[in-house]
Amino acid sequence: MKKLILSVLLLILWVCSEAPIFNGIASIVSGETNKKPNILLLYMDDLRPELNAYGHEKIISPNIDAFANRSVQFTQAYSNVSVCGASRASMLTGMLPTKTRFINYSTRVDVETPKQVTWPRLLKDNGYTTISNGKIYHHLDDRMTDWDEVWRPYAFDENDQGLPPIDYWQSLWKDYQRPENIALYKATDTGPAYESADVSDNTYIDGLLTEKVIRDLKRLKTSHKPFLLTAGFIAPHLPFNAPTKYWDMYDRSEIKQPYNNYVPKNAPKTSISHWGEMRAYTGIPKQGNVSDETAISLIHGYYATVSYVDALIGQIMTALTELELDKNTIVILLSDHGYNLQEHTQWGKYTSYRTSTRVPLIIHLPTMEKGRKTNALVDLVDIYPTVVELLDLELPKHQLAGESLVPILNDPSHYGKSHVFLKNAKGYSIQTQEFSYTEFIDDNNQTFASMLYDHRTDGDENINVVNEASYADVVAQLSALLHTKYLSNILGDS
Image 1: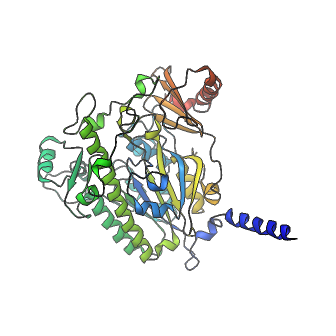
Image 2: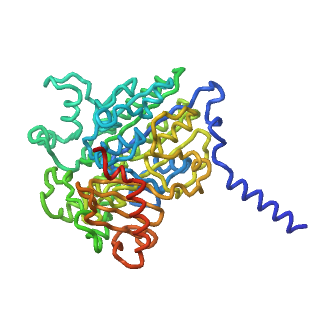
Image 3: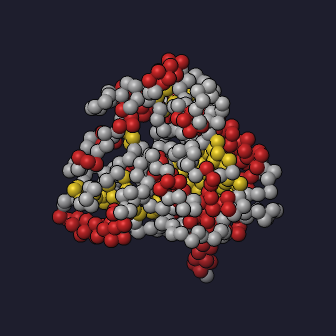
């Protein structure tokens, strides 16, 4: 009898521990107003999942970590294309990149996919107030009709140069605060790759952005309409500029270069980036490696900018709670892609390596009190159908490439997708839970190099095993998948 009672108790505990962390879409709608949930999108640039919440102790990010601890945190989320403009276009349209679409930072949704209803536009058409603050689309003036309001620091201020907002913003976004760097930037249109300035949190552009977002929350508090409010942070994008106090959070002597600052064994030459974006900054050599001292400063600067934005996110989340908007607001935090901090000799993004493609993705629903991690395989095109289902909207008639993450939010033990498709320059990749397979395909649609990394034994991708006999079947299967399901992505528009 005692054994039976014990068994029943254990069963009850197991059921409770595995219970859904939210009880369906209806449960996230405010009972007082019956208003559809709001969306707060915290969109970061170049953020790799190197946070405490992701099992790393190098970066100090207490506010993001606290947010993750009461949300669903995706540990295997990938950007479909690891460069700003193209990634953002893909995520906001729900469409995958192809040979001729969403190629690089210069991507424009209004030019490349003018008929696609983006999910901000879908929300606007369904009665949402939509506000774009900061960097959401790469270009300030791309798809402005998606929003009731578009704002970036300084962009719409009057200027004595007679420049339109898009050009004026382009001349200011590097946002140096030290006089010598301001002068250099004005004179040469370049400047150092990092800056530590003894200024307040609200001095840099991301601080001004945060103040605007909090003002919006206060204004939207009294609105009878649901809202999509965005906070598009520049950091930790180059240049790595942050108030000095965030640099001082780190002991420089404890900052280390990555152990795998070498080209992976058997890696094709084309897979290694020449990091042209970084080389455009003052003090960075046009060829060859940076000095060890410069490398440490760059990594230090990256860490400082992440900690800076972490503090700003803390301010926004505090305001959301104090205004009691947290009770009916879905919060999504993500990055457009990862970033290489000298892994495999590379600085920057836009490579087919995991340091470029893997991103943090954290989703909080108002009914969640305790968070869970999920290892489900997902990609950023999944955001669109997820938002549609969470808000109980009708899917648009056009095709979406992603799958709703609601089943995973309900049960984080869900496996997720069998694979995701990624494209970076001429590299076309299939990412699974176990492998990353890439073919480099030229303009004549001929494969001229390939690589396979076994994440079961080589998560840091240091040995290309594509030509090893024991992996022949894996290569054959993934190559066949790439050239059948994603043939149209490879061929592009004729």
